[in-house]
Image (cartoon, rainbow, N blue to C red; front, side, top):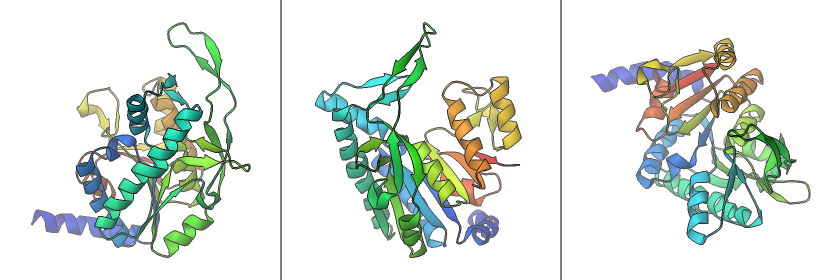
Length: 294
């Protein structure tokens, strides 16, 4: 009986979202465990098979760090951002466009989904340029230093032609966060940024960030303070008041920007919890935190 009630509750959402575009961003944390990836593939297959057009974007920073350590390639992380030297870029190509992308495709194929593996280089999907040196503040000394992040790029624009072609013909694109400039130089791009820019270009109904956190909390570590839904004005107040701080500020600012650019809603969902994705999309209570314009 409980399952029948859930089906009744999900029906209006299925009717509402059929034919819409969802961009789902995988963090490296949700792809490193095989059983978790298989479970996620089941959920995404269901979403895809009821007529929602799904586009998956992934990075893989954790796996890149693990491979670098295994091969003895030293890594430099400044203010949470990776400096991508030439050797690290070669590893990123292997991990992002190789292992992780193929693992996701294999998990989706097991569910009968016709998925297509891509990077931002394929079909000129992501046009990028090298990120110029930036001033980064030392949290300990307060001193600002100029940092060259190497082969890290910024998105100039998204070419959605190939993605639209695939989505319109029933395919599910899986895109790794590598891109190139007009000269063919390859760059490592922040996967959240790639997912956001693709969601804007595709006029997506939803952008869903799958990580290993349950959502946004007013008090860090206090599960009783989790927020289920936030409007644009509420998000701005939380940033101004300092409740949202440190590494969450850029993510919030990115979400504010994409909502203003036409994406209907954004979500932070724990992708390591079974059925959390489906609960967030197809139930009234949801499971993570939903961000909307109003």
